[in-house]
Image 1 (cartoon, rainbow, N blue to C red):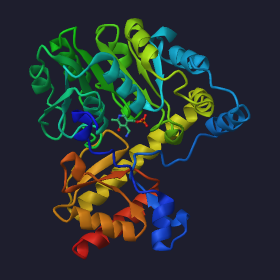
Image 2 (cartoon, protein in one colour):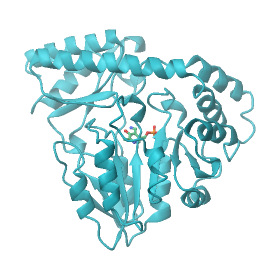
Image 3 (tube, rainbow, N blue to C red):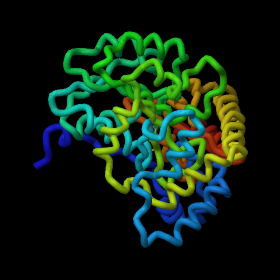
Amino acid sequence: LAVKGVQALSPYQPGKPIDELARELGLDPAEIIKLASNENPLGPSEKALAAAKKALESICLYPDGNGFDLKQALAKRFGVGMDQLTLGNGSNDVLEVIARCFADANSEIIYSQYAFAVYPLATLAIGAKGVEVPAKDWGHDLDAMAEAVTDRTKLIFVANPNNPTGTVHTADAIEAFLDRIPERVLVVLDEAYCEYLTGDEYPDGIKLLERYPNLITCRTFSKAWGLAGLRVGYAVSSPAIADILNRVRQPFNVDSPALAAATAVLEDEDYLRRSREVNAAGLKQLCDGFDNMGLSYIPSAGNFVAVEVGPQAQSVYHSLLEHGVIVRPIAGYGMPEHLRVSVGLAKENEHFLDVLAEALSSGG
Ligand code: PMP
């Protein structure tokens, strides 16, 4: 019964739930280490938690459908108008709404090989044709993506940094790419991991909006801001694009605890600073560990890293699971010899590295 594009879909594969694995292994859930979904290992910001708890007192009421307070805080932080913002139930929601607004069954949507799984999902769900451009050095081949534009192209998804590879492009590269894209084609710059970037060489997709009216920059509270469970993301665009997105999104797509927590966490600079510090240190710890084991990995700009464990990746994944460590196999992304591991706290990373070394020495 489903339309053709939907029949071709394979479902998004979330990480195994902690409680389920703990039950299977007969362990306490506290003993499980989940490094599978690029979550923030710090736990939530106290300020966000307090705001979400307070918002629970009003859950018999609909949330503010316009997300006024959160939009006001975001507009202030980024120096944009509130009319440039679209809030979503996670940035996944925003990505889907964008596809629904600007493409249809006659359209082509371009994305890269090894790019974030939701791009093909959002594309196929509306019956559009997905044009997957082969990657270069595990990252987006921006030249080839620009060359793939046809008269039917409506949208291009670019993840910077990308998940699951962690690859990132400089501002120069992104601007050179945007210069090549005709204005009738919208470019979605997905900056879910941008808060982890350090260095002036990387683009700020919100600043680029002034120069590129066909750009939509998407961000999330799920990663560096530590609110993955509440589902809040947003797009920043021209007011004209935001107007269309806001017509099509669900009227109450972000719930009140999520709105309150996201608004509060934007005031918690200390939390953001710690997120970045813990991530930088943890990423280095993981990569040093891989170097010591002689394993290759894709240098990452995110809060995760794809490590190459070879053809036995699936059995390594299972033996990590048996030791209570959950990582992410990425065969579904066409990377069957890699595992993606999210950066945890120092102790979690250490335990993961120990268990990985053991799994590899026992042949998976
Ligand atoms: N974009 C990228 C590149 C991601 O990796 C993710 C999360 N895995 C998202 C968007 C969506 O995040 P969320 O829906 O939690 O905002």
